Length: 105
Image 1 (cartoon, rainbow, N blue to C red):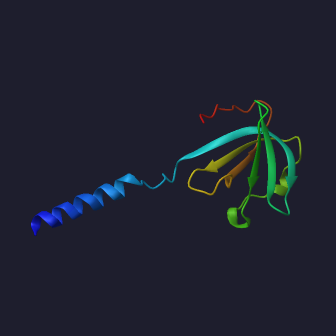
Image 2 (cartoon, helix red, strand yellow):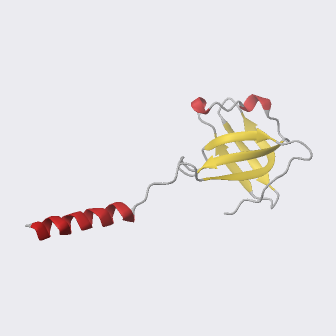
Image 3 (spheres, rainbow, N blue to C red):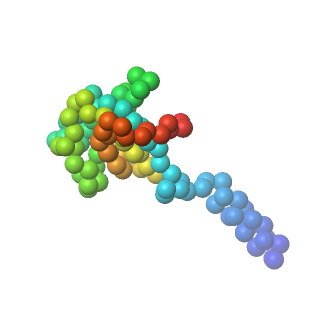
């Protein structure tokens, strides 16, 4: 009986470890230029330095006001990995001279 309990606990521990939850602090950033913006729909597109375009969606309760952005603005967009694909957690305007870190993908 004790052997079955130990075996069950080992199987449960393995199953829990096989599917780790995403880290809350895990995020990535994309820096680029706003090429399309629709504040009413909460969507915009950013083109990075390599020429890739990234489409983003902003949830209404995210606290991000897109009305302050315009096409042509340089921005740094933060995407939380625990959020749905391309759901941003922050969008910050960049000014001339701001440092930009390269993001590892």
